[in-house]
Image (cartoon, rainbow over all chains, first blue to last red; front, side, top):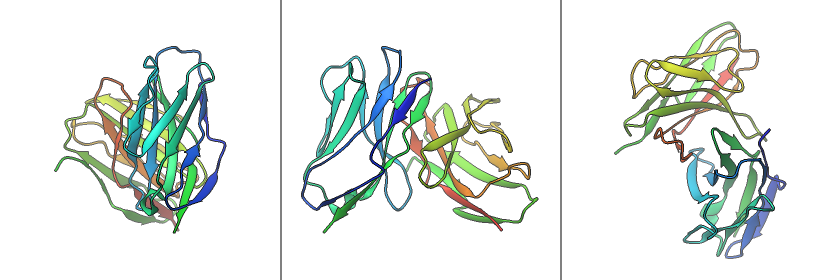
Length: 111
Length: 113
């Protein structure tokens, strides 16, 4: 069975620091997509970043970047220069024929 | 503006009552999904639909029903058969290509009194 594991239920950092959220997954597939979604206290889920498994280059979106290690089945999210607005639940998700979600990491940015 | 609209945002229900949550999208997406979210857990798939007049059960479909009579609409009915319906419900949609990039509504919080 395909699974997604986020081992950090909660993290907190000071504003402007860099934080890395971990995600590992288990699959026997070779072609798939990986995602990080953000759910702020307003509760609307939004896509942060996406990675295609066939691409070796790590995806980057402004302050957000991933470290995709295909052999290790690891997909961590790095947030640089963290801001108060980054406070949210972050969900890692794996997509092959269906979307599999991790349990989420609650990230708190402290002023 | 294009997007997904869920209503109501908050809903209270007495035990034994059926309730219907609305989900409408104007993004011209083919696929629509209903997820349930409980504290400390990831999203769990209730039902999904990839085309009009067709839908499939997800992981936790028992006690729920859906319809997809129009491309834009995918209402979810929480029936009295659902033993623990108090939860946050999220509707999402995407193109049919299966790239996984979902667009979400703001959610509906259902509380059973």
